[in-house]
Length: 232
Image (cartoon, rainbow, N blue to C red; front, side):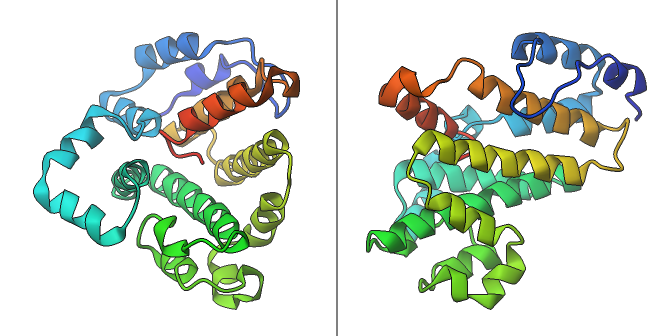
C-alpha cells in the first residue's frame, strides 16, 4: 500500500534539529491513514518491555525456566522477550530494526562488562550469532567473526569509550539514524518509509529539552525509559 499523500505532508526533519510535530500529533495522523496490518507494525515498534503482551508471557512457567537458565535480570529478560517478538516479525524492516538494536546494545553491554571484569554471560540478551559470539568474551576488537557480523562494531566500541553519558547516547542515536537512512534509501512511499520517519522523530523528541545542565537525574530517567524499549 502506498502512502504518497501521507508522506508528502510530513514535516522535514534532520538529525540534531528540533521537530515541531509532537509525537501525539504524528500518532494521530498515522492512526487515520495506516492500514490495520501496518498499524500492528507501528504498535510493535512502540512496544516496551513492560507491555502487557510481555508481562503475560512471564505467567508461563516454561518462560520463567528460560530466565533461570539464562541468568538474566528481570528487566533484561523482559527485553529479550521483546526482541524475540520483533525478530519474529515478517516485515523485513521491522525485523532488522530489532536485530540491529539488539546487536549494538549487546556490544555496548559486553564492552562495559569486559572493562569492569563482569560476567559477560549475564548481560547479553538474545541467541543470534552476535550474542553467541559476545558470550565468548575476550577482546572484541580482535574478533574477526564479530566484525563481520556487526558492520558498526568499530564505531560502537569507540562510542562505548566515551565518558560523557549524554554524548555517548547521542552518538548511538546518530548510528541509529544513519541505519534508518540507509535502509530506506529506496523506500519512498511505503510503510517502511513511514515507520522510519516515526523512529527518527522519536530520536529527535528524546533530545528536544535535554541538556547536560539538567543533570544526572534526568539522564537516569531517560535511560530507565529507553531500557523499556529497543534502546539501551
